[in-house]
Image 1 (spheres, rainbow, N blue to C red):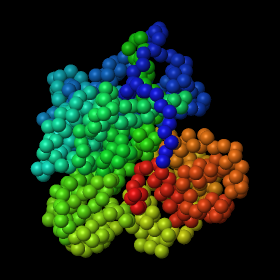
Image 2 (tube, rainbow, N blue to C red):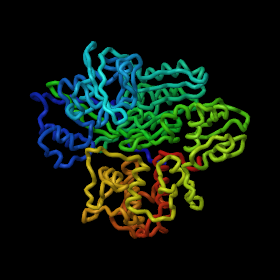
Image 3 (cartoon, one colour):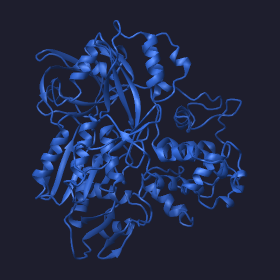
Image 4 (cartoon, helix red, strand yellow):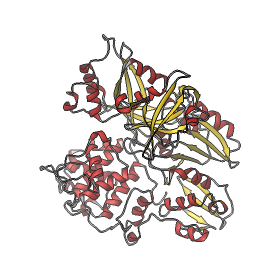
Length: 629
């Protein structure tokens, strides 16, 4: 059980606006440096702050959400915040450092008529590239304009560059749509969280409530939006609960909560709920999914989300320009941030099949046990899959994905008898690819290892084996933690400065990510030494650092380690630099065996690493335990 942390009320908004005191004209470089020193969420090295221009400073940060806007760019930014009724070409996009990734195309819009597709990457508008524009928001501003005017966009599709010309017009792009499918599933599709999204949730849930005994909220390709909107949406779904916590540079913890929802009002959805996500689900949509996960209110299906766990403030200037700065990191109700790692679904399946997997699981309830109905317990709810649909040509690929995603010991029955995915596959004649490792059957930690494998967060060798008794190398450790947490970093942050890591090495990308996130260091000679074995004190230190980065309660526990705890005999066997992390890992239940039984300098085996990683993820709350209580 995590300790509740003291909080205060927070201002609402994934992008907040603060007005500065009047100054003469646009912001100066020195003023920009001061704003960053005082407000940026993380400490910025002075070598970056000393760069001569604001653009060079923000580029060196590697944070595309922190940048300066001219008055014209800021006006366009403000007008496009909602995106539901604007003049433009009719697309929803995810703003990336490489361009604008099209996540949705409005019906009957200029973009649809021109042939723009989901997944296209917009890299230029009227010949101005994203690099020349200066930021994703600036490029997006070039696409909007007056109705009746033309714009030519350049896109990348399947490694081919295409140019599409279209005429801007007023486009109405509803952020939420609702309908009843299969005569009993209430289906809400939300492509972004704009000003009206929360009220749309209330409207559609209320309208469909009598007909629906299952619900699906589709957040795939939802890039986020307004914090107020997502807080309202969460409130309408599950009632008055804390939706998120935000932490500023000084460590102040504030809460986002539905308001003015009375405490006694329950959520509007009482039936089993599925939330669909993918790699383009970001920001506000990650808050929604994480809240459903943390309160045990919904089954999350799809792929790991994008990983935007930071919020910005906009510092306005008297001349109409503005400086947007990342000022806060936000956390789910269970104190977990999606920043750089995203939200991991309960069932990891091909995002293109996630809706079909959901429809299979949302089959009508059956009171009598039957060989034609598979009954599963997932995320605290009972789900029913009917054979006729599962083996049909339309749904067999999705059913195979579902079987692949099932973890060991998931409560699952066929005809009243407990079954495994392999037994269901044989009984119903649907082939599937098991993600479980064959060589961990004799491992005492086999179920934990295969639970991680079913989630796609633990990989084996080229033969599909895990090698549970093999000692863990530094290269394997870094790859394991990056894969498990879904970590990533901006390409602009560059490569790790290790002299013995070549970018062609299989572990190089993972090393770059871990280094840029501050999780690893080299030796005094600037070497990484990927083939060196990882001893227990090294592993426990890295494990606790991972937890510290992801979970606010782990960070606070590390800060509260006492001298008495550090003086314990078993802890004193470890080097001084490792002791606070060892105390924290032991106290929070991450260890595979009692601390007294661990030799600090003995190599960590792969199965030990896997089970301790599993226990940390279980503590954080981002996976379902092997045995549900």
